[in-house]
Image (cartoon, rainbow, N blue to C red):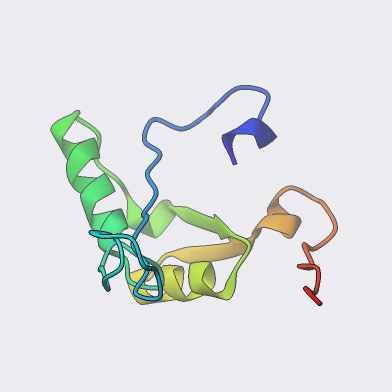
Length: 98
């Protein structure tokens, strides 16, 4: 995602490898860090606070390309925008696997 920007505007970027459908320990379990839960946002807020930054969720924007992203934003009470709209690009349509 950061490669979509000329200059990386982000101070904190995190991802979750947890997936209850997976087979690799310790990541094959349900985690609140995985969307649509918003545990990762809580961790980011804590890290930002530790670094002297207050996250104003009321003025924040969650940009995503999947329904889980939209649901995460909704669950956290954060405004959401689809990535294709934010980046002014055609919507992403996953290819069908035969």
